[in-house]
Every structure is written in structure tokens, then in C-alpha cells.
View 1 (spheres, helix red, strand yellow):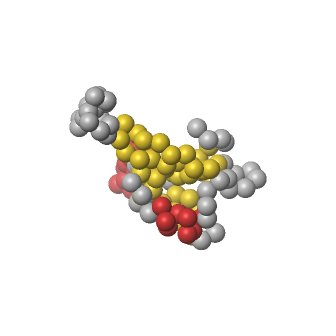
View 2 (cartoon, rainbow, N blue to C red):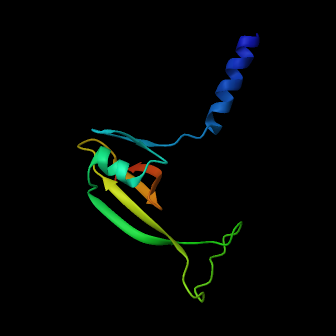
Length: 110
């Protein structure tokens, strides 16, 4: 009976477990927290790179810091697109401040 209760508790708790995506390349695995240089070393140059400046929000709010500031605060973000071959989903690696953040998979870039 205790074993059954333990198994049930584990199964019920699984949906809440967070999992980070990783990317398998010929040179090794890439995961969140890796440097951009590590991604290039392991996976080669991405097919497409998109660079933009993401807005910075006031702490604890969804309110953007006003553009009337002397400098417009933003965080440099790069999206690196990797085509992994026929039948494979496209991988988009998000690089913020030189570090890999999320890695997302899809049929086409978003």
C-alpha cells in the first residue's frame, strides 16, 4: 500500500517538474547556461541570426521603462536558428548577454 501511494505521488508530481531543453550537435550537447562560443564550437554557425534589443521592465511589473530616459534600456538578444536535417524540428537558441537562455523547437522560426 505504501508503494502504491509513493508511485501515485511521483506520477501526480511529474507535470509540475520543469525541464530545460537541450540541443544535441555533432560536437556535443548544448543547454541553458552555456556560452554562445560553446554553441558555435559544438554546433557550428547557425543558419540565421536575428539580433534585437528586448525592453527592460521595472522590477516586479510589466511596465516598460519609459523611452524618455537619456538612454533606452534594453537587453541584447540573439536568436540563432539551426536546421537539424530532414524530418527534424528547427531549433532556435536564444542568447542573452552571451549566455544560452531557452532553446525551443518548432516546424518553422517564430
